[in-house]
Image (cartoon, rainbow, N blue to C red; front, side, top):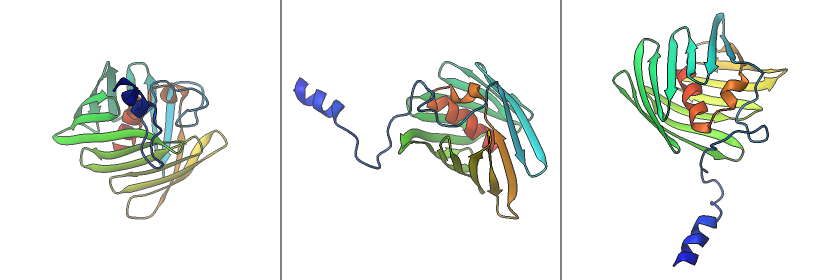
Length: 187
């Protein structure tokens, strides 16, 4: 029986099956390309967002999310946020709406799927590209010359996007990175 249990644990996952998220990031398995420092820079059209990402969480205009153990609490866009981060799941609430996200690795991408408040979420994050659907908005960004650039379409005219990701974000566990990144795109 013990040998059978060991064989099941050691058995490879089927092709196309989501694998557990990583607990420790390294340069070779990072989810996103990053720049040194702790400042995130996001430009959508003519709107500029800067945020600081440190050990305690994410702070910027319209967003303040603090991480403590397996909890993330704060505010996003004026709504209270209370999240629990366990294993490959992020559960909780944004305002009165439920958060239920699954995080894992598939074919080199960090995949985030589920709901973040009122928004359906599907994200594929890699060092070379970000493809994300967050609510009505679809992002398609490619990494070029130290930043991601591309477009977001929220149902009207597409807008240009530029994103610089700090090393303090990509050095986190996959589930924490997914929490902070999804919160940023959802605000």
